[in-house]
Amino acid sequence: MTLEYFDYRKDYDNPIVTPEIRARFMKLEPNRDYTGHTHDLGHEIFAVVEGEIDFDVAGRKARLGPGQMCVALADETHHLRVVGDQPAIIYLSVTPHIHPTHTFWNADGTKAPFRYDTVQQGWTHAPAKPDLVDAQVAAVRALAEAAQACLDTHLAVEADLKAALADGDATGARAAVDAMWAGVFASFKAAYAMGATWNELAPRAAPTSREPSA
Image 1: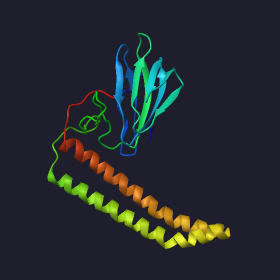
Image 2: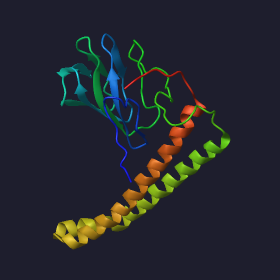
Image 3: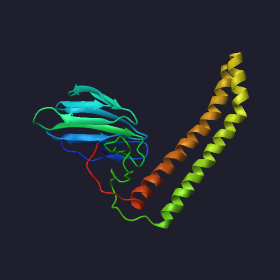
């Protein structure tokens, strides 16, 4: 079986879009500004593959070339502009990737209305149906149940872990942490499942116009 792979010289769409991460190569054209938005939840990594790009991340500025990267944390506005008259290519990833994936801002510094379909892939914008609402509610319920079970486990082993740490009991501490991890793992898996359902529901229930964005 051949491993699927992508080539920065020709693949400019999102090869992966999940609640955990979105990633892609992107060709940036000269003489225009890109982005000017934030991400409410996601941290975004930019790596320059070809060309030079001026980055402005929350007022912090740098010019990056091939092999260099920078990060825009959640809530940090980011702007990109190509240096020179030739296109540039970047790799970018955003994690997590939960709608509304991009937050735009008004001139007075207030948030513009949320846009739930700025990044979509692999499906048409079919309207939402009531069964998708049911699926979202069920996913939230499953997340709540997983979080409650996680809390119950934490409370059950809290005293044991504190005692083990105080006594230098590595075996006891490990057992307690392993028990906690089982609940943490289940909670994150339920959260990702809920995010996947949400990413299906929100853009269909509240569609908006789309514009290219990083």
